[in-house]
Length: 57
Image (cartoon, rainbow, N blue to C red; front, side, top):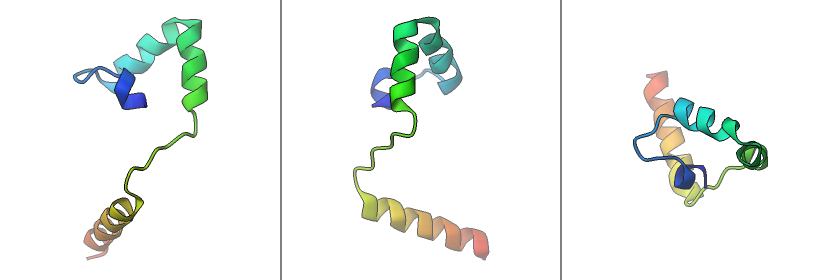
């Protein structure tokens, strides 16, 4: 959801600055806190495992 409201070429810093200007947007950010949507958990876990292997060796 966060990426759907952030501009494609907008940095996260600029995005958050824009969001805190409005009280309504600030409430939306508070709703998003701790929320993560994973579309393909198995692929994500595989990628994390591969990255860990790269770091170890």
